[in-house]
Image (cartoon, rainbow, N blue to C red; front, side, top):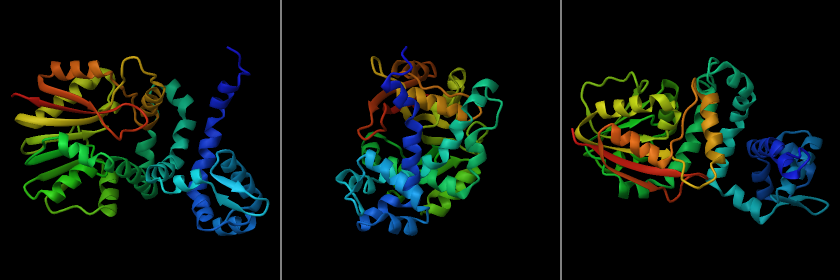
Length: 326
């Protein structure tokens, strides 16, 4: 392979562009430029940064076609205006501003076989990190609330596993007094979610680990969004089995999960899979569609339906609904 090839060098330098863009969002440079065209000195003062640093940062934003410079002042381009109105990009920029630290540790994680403490476990106690994470997850989940409502038959007592902001189940509980939602997540996530969002009286938070959770009664339905990808491949059967144990006979489950599709480039999903190792204590696994169906079938699940989410992430996001006969 020719190491001087431009595409490869662009990939090696990509972290510089992404980091600069995250910093620009963090400092409010784009938002300030949207309010009015401004000179470099004005932008530097308003954003509380050194003028030389601001000049270099704006040059990068210009290369990305987000700002233009007319020789005197900077203003947003049409692409920059779209970026400022893109809730997902803004929320992800706030969250990924913190995530760079995790990837710096990648060599140590690869060598230690997961012995090092996970990034999320260390950072989630920081309220700013927890809130940035939950806000990003909430903004993304909102795009599919109507679709999930049409496709998921979740009734009566619902358990939301690894709830995060619990966007969908919060919506269900708010709009149906006959539903009771029990939301399960780690203590710092529960605390942050309670600060950030309003939950109705038929919504209950439980700060607990999923595998050690032992409720007094089983549930009629389970909703689980982007938790199973963090499960090591060899333990997936156990995690699915735990889900079945928590359900009443005839109970249903709905999983929102990333799945690899036949014949598609899996670069983004492979990167996500790698990120589970820097975020957790073990490397997770992203199944293929057929692999996930097989694991569910072997657990006794019936009526397995697997459909792509219409407003999914930049890679293959699916809703998988199942039932267990007994």
